[in-house]
Image (cartoon, rainbow, N blue to C red; front, side, top):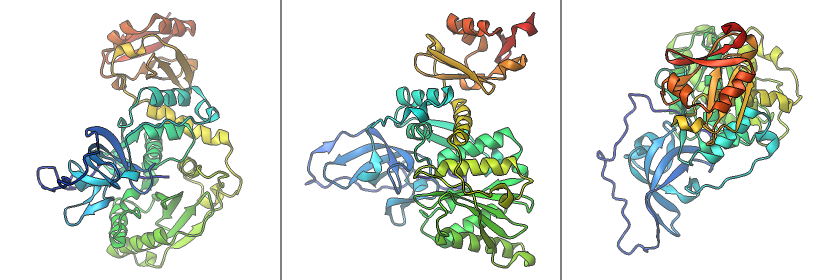
Length: 450
């Protein structure tokens, strides 16, 4: 399992290539059997699945445990890199734009497609289409960028999903922090979650940050934006397992939802205790200055070895949709979730992520081979597997709008003109037709337009 952070804050210094001159050139007697430079690659921390950066291979000496890479994009924040240059480049933010050495075992530059069980990838049309898009159209270095609701971590934050993230999610295998953040973003976009809940950015308290005091301070600093009426959600990865911590500041209590029912993780236990006490002391909250109470919750338990990330998403879903119910009353069973319940979360996630798949050319939706309508979204796939989403509900017989913001800003009338007649024919068969209106296409039911 993997996790990574977000974009750096604007006031976080990034060290560019021109500001530091690090001589990483090979010695003259270095063997000349080198890999070809300029190959795009992905960099991981901890495990090969924990993708935290996109880079370009500069030099690859066969037999050397490290490769030299130019770091192009980072999706982590304040994470310590595997081979730090003390006092110069120690974190991912500082590595951005620089040539550094990275362990070969944590770099992957070749596509190794894995065929996941079809009962997970084909559970419904939208997951199937998203999986097909990742398989056929995305390169290993491609990223889907999703803007986060500013009420989650503040403004100008993004979730970055790599090709592998989509394949893992659609294939129901282990997932990372970006996948979980994408679902949190989905929930925050759908309902007024920020009124009752606050999310801690776990990348700032991750065990990959070696300074424990810094991790506790980062937690205390994030709590500055919380009010006592909000529950604090902390999705946390121990390095191999996802769990959810929920802090009730008013009750000075920490609820632990662990789908494996493992022993208390002493590391995060200590970080949260110190962070809470630091925050309480700063605000002179005398009544809350005792050690927080820790309460393991009897929550649904996973039956496999890879489901913890999906369970954390399901826990969050249940909590935010039942905000008036106490957590101990909301979860009171050892039974596992049914696969259908997990698939509901996965479908919601896939539908949300599909909105941010870019259509680079109108021609991409010519020659339609698949389409479906579900949960108020019509998805039309072209020859390249690109997904187009129309918001609204056909069965309601109400007009609805096609979101053109994800269609490379093509004018609605141009899109309509380029659309394959077969698409319009299928929609007409449902009793609907399309017409341009301002910056969108409007989907009208025939009975409404007559």
